[in-house]
Length: 419
Image (cartoon, rainbow, N blue to C red; front, side, top):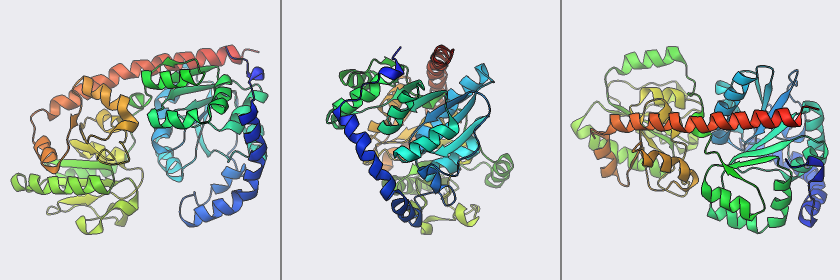
């Protein structure tokens, strides 16, 4: 096991730590500008300056950090497994995006608190660590804050990095600061990767890595309002319902064209569009959930332009076209829809979730489409139910990897906190 006290701090890291004092000078005006643009939480933005924290839970606390919405939601399966094995533990989840807090609040596991991670300034870090006093820190996927890593090491708090993900472009970026990352990885008592390519990239940067897969297939089902679901199911009846989510402009255009073709043979079919950001919605297409509107019998499209409703949408839809797979976004998480029994369709651009879609492809648990004609044909395919069943089997297999990871984390926790 890596000794936290022996973390190496080379020139790059020492230079970063010196420069991080400047972050506090710019923090307040920058955060206020972001607040005015709706990019920060209206009442909690000062958490990013190490203020107004929630109370620390009693007893031992495991802190997990992930950058945004998808990554934060993926933590739930690991947290649930840790919590089931050790009911004495509490959990702190941090992230940086405003949307992540809103959606996570609806889906948080028991004994779990969410906070925004403070900016990486010395005073902010100190206030955060003195308040929460974590017993173990888990960095998830790819977001490491050098000052916080260094401070945790100095305080003898064990750290690990799990489910790391690093594509070729990210690896090239990391290589430019290889000395910095070599130091950061030296502070980790354990590093695991989602796939072999990531493991190779990390190893070339000096990390000792093992492959444990993605956390996303093991996440619990997304929550939804059961009463509302039942009302909508009664209203919509036996209509064919499919969705495009989380959707960007390219996805919406293709899905809408495909839906027009579908309606030629199934005139009652309903398309649910769930834009990744509300501003991506096109009001003229149909009623909007943000206005309290629900689809009437004659409506072809329903715009679910509100955050945190994918659990509802995926329970209503039989098939989901995963957004972000037709452009530079390079994909979104397919597992949330698959876990709720949806047949998965996706475009060819999935680089950010390459391992996940490869797992589904290996068991014929998803269908690749490229055009509106492809989508329309897929929506009436006899293979949809089989695709959904195959994805369900892939989820069961992948979940076993998270079971093993949870055991490794608890072993690390017990070994490093025994004294």
